[in-house]
Length: 256
Image (cartoon, rainbow, N blue to C red):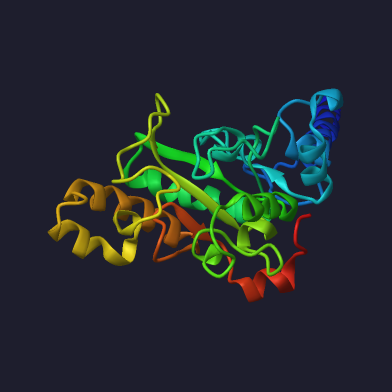
């Protein structure tokens, strides 16, 4: 009789734990599920105080995007467009400090970090930019002191939209896990010139503009990201796309 009693108690407790896991967005092995079935307040925000959320961040949450730092606590976040340390020398994100991406992209990023840590457990990602609302894209476009004919060489045309505007592109580098200090990959973020071009690395090596250590660090980053389904581009070592533009248009709306 006593054995039967404790079996019933055990089943009840197991059911309660499973319900709590579902409420918290956890899988059976304790990993965070990155999906939109979980409360946006719970999955997308590190601080539950609504009054502390900027209008921009509230819009990102309402659009169904995920707070990367909440989903992957091991990464570091330094949104360059929330500072003046960027190509434009202008803060266009204001109070936004959290990086947001589409849930599927966060899941891929988590896989990339796992791959990175298999060979380099001392490293992590330092993220410079994620989703970039189209309204911010327009500010960047208008602020760029270049003729409209060559502006697309530096920033995407907001009328057409970019993968950042869909929340499926991420700008990042490698950093020491213990300190968050970034590794040297040859140029700073937002450097527009051949030394930042993956497509020009052999040429830049010959000319002494970058070193073999720079290329080796870039290869570590590229290997981790591509293993999770990201694709780099030829002109920015820090930029990776989770989907093609065509696929992004099929799956998502531009974040306004």
